[in-house]
Length: 207
Image (cartoon, rainbow, N blue to C red; front, side):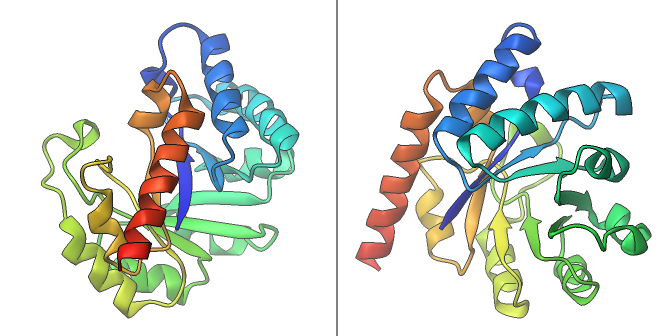
């Protein structure tokens, strides 16, 4: 089971240097991918952040993905893009140069559409309650399981995943999990990722 990091610099105390330090700590811990999610930034602000984060990921050999900003991804030669289902469907003709295209989905219908139109993987959520979406009820593992059983491309779970509920994810056919808050707030991302990996391994051994 793979682990993807979704960034949120607003969860990192301090200035942008602290954010870059956090990204380096996470990259050093070797997640399977880091997706730069900072959707509130302007294109120029995002580009500056993306160039630095890409260089950090390159040093540690970690896959790096641009979220939302297709033009920026092409300008700085990032071959992985992640999009909302709406942006994905509206930009199908602009995605041919990417090696991997990921799509966020919130229903089985959206998952099927993403697969139909050529997405390489999807991120499905949110699975458990999370502070990021306090007013929206979580969809639960039954939702995740339904998607995994009905599409063939890789599925990654997102939303409120922690060491108390990760065992529920391993009971589905999910290809992995996405972590944001726990990694962004962690003082020791490498230790945290290793803890998750250890827990995942033990869960699969029990099954």
